[in-house]
Image (cartoon, rainbow, N blue to C red; front, top):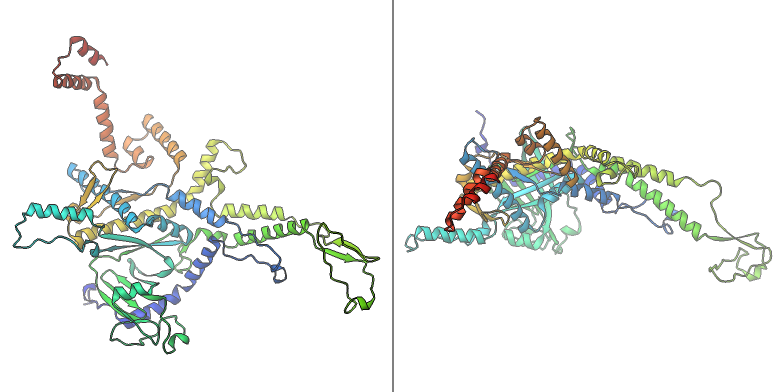
Length: 575
């Protein structure tokens, strides 16, 4: 019989080194392409200028790539993602439990963002759009509850008092779960038939932090971190160059290479080629979520996820080159280079070799000329190339390849009706629906892992505060989850004008009896818990009913010690 997953051994140091070398070679082209596009985003791509002209030419680098990314990412992250938990059963208790989990999860995501001091989900969207793929990592952080109160068997404290003290501690302590975005160029997935089966994260991290965390020492011969009493030299780092680093008494490196291995059962850490920690993590799943932006059917890591900038990789540098030509042509036209024509030979004694004298030209000053000399300026001869037309064509191609300007409210011809503009906006946004859908799926996997960690690793109620919630503190524990992990995440990238249009359409369909109110709320207004909203609407309608208003008035007068007159009752009944 084949061995089960529970019987497979943990990864060894030799296996991890071999796996690191293999994945670095396999994903090298992916990383190189992402780095090229990042240079394009940050306007670090040099303009192609002939060497003879580079010393005098002035470069023009346009921010089109960065601005298009900023607008698309801003459109996708304008509204926070909303978590909805479908009830496990059609009962009031199941609906209340699902509502509790949804409110807790939305608040927990905001809490983790606050403690990370970073818009982690926004960085995921950024990477999916700009790099073609993004990675999130969620970990259980038990150190944040290191001061958890303990109850001694000989303590006089009652059980209720201890539970209150523990609850106060959990509310004041940091959140026991932490997430962060991972640079996709440091993430190396191993995907099988069941999706992500294992992964490596290879990154350079500050040496002092790594040294303190794992109790390592600095080897004076190599400058690398090594375990105390271990092999002082160890195996060479994958990708490291021999030479000065191997010389005696090498200077300590500012960073240390940390390789993290994770699968659904084991984890392992390599620091500068040495295995420093490994074991079972007990998460039940890999704590990484890998999501492509614009995904393609290709299995090539360099082509599986396509950046939004891929279509502009050659167009933006071309536009920079054309604008540089235009700018320098105008500069030379406004400040032309002078030259002397009709040169008359001069007495050789007045110069070194009889060559024309150097011209010291200063605008605004009189320049003496010899007999027969004529001062002119270098000018373009013939019909100049139509740079303006080529620039306009390149801009149009960039607009078509990237985010169309109509997506940001700019009509294609400068004058368009509101209906046409909305139609063009909706058409343009279709190209980004895949990114939004993949981001929703990624966050659903993160939420499921959060619940699993609360249920299996933390094992007790976790509190989070939500100022906008009527209950304030929201607690979620293993009994609230009870092995049920169904969740839906909705990312709404639409703007205010689109919300108004969707609301008008929903009202028209419901008014014409072509759709139900629940369908309109879910599909057009993005309200996942349509049943609760419908109950609130029915409650408002009941309160506005004349007989209910009469009963409320009677009760209010009775509590005030007054008796309503017949005229008052008649007026309330007729209201």
